[in-house]
Image (cartoon, rainbow over all chains, first blue to last red; front, side):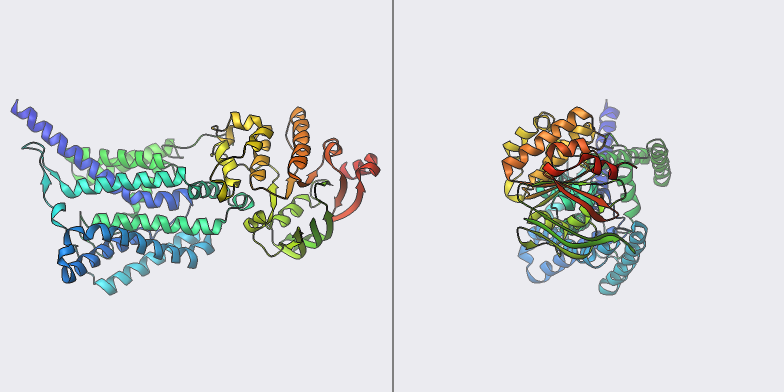
Length: 305
Length: 229
């Protein structure tokens, strides 16, 4: 019977590992699901907004350590809020200065935001240096939780999971229960008509883009609990993130969740039996095959055209 | 109440509307008749500010709105039901109407709106895109009315809709006019529909109003001549 309980423990930990990857993917994809999924803007600099959040957390952490060590256990919540505000404010500026001029030209947006991402990476490098940095984690985020002797679940993973659930719920409520969400969805479907029913689409676009960037900032703050931050930390994730959003079906938040879940679980289950890169190749091939059969993604809304 | 002075507009280099003038009284229903390509939709789009206005002045209740952006014009009291209806297909009927409501309504659809279109209340949780053409037309009108307009612009409301519903729509429009003291400007190619509702007839030809006639003096044959190809 011993091997059975051991197998159970491994299955539980591996399952949790898959859930962790799922949360990370979803956290990154949420901001993009708003910007790319709802607005149709291909934002190649999305990863950099994540990096902004991570560096913000790092700065808050160092300042706390230096000036207010007593504040240490709690700084993280403050850092999350600040990451959201800073990434959101920079997103607001970027929309105003660049994206708003390019709504009629999606391919140019791709190039322009890619350029922006290079500029931002170099800015990070000039300010924080090329070496990776990491925030000092508060005590309560370190170590792990042991429901039984053999099961070992890391606390930071649990924290990221909680944050993901909270953020997803907030975005759901905002998109489907608030006036802003109504206006975003209307603008996405028909910009001209939305103006003609009295929606200030320029303001909606700016708010939406800023919110998406702010969410990326929160994701960045969460990442500091898992890994260290370098100037290119965000850009490593951008391809995966686009994949999740496209696979899920661009305009569907449910689709984004389902696709993040299936990609993460497939990845982490296969990783247990084979090498990491092989698992990735298989996952991506499966995604491509499914997209060939369902180009509109997993979930799409069916209406008469 | 609703005034257009020397309105000029067009696409790119080509001028479509040539110094149009129109003065519509409160509660009046004006029909703008004309064949395809004569400038009806261009007129409506430039009134809404969807197309850039080259020159001239538009005013509602004495307030000049020609410099305003589209959403500000809606606030000033113009509502628009475009050709092809343009409802939001993947949103529910209720959400479609809510897009037009001002923030002060807090998302609650006024009862009198549902009373005008009972079918919309019945179907409020369906996706707008799954409604029939006639129902979509009613939805588009309800959405426009939700903005609480003084002037309602309807661009070819009978296009692709079955005759029995056309009659319904005509009746509803007259009802709304009386209920809300609404001014209505409707563009059409179907004379029978406008004969039923309009107080005044205009014929637009190559971006100019060529005939203007009050209802009791209107000669159907003359207008028909302009509509036949």
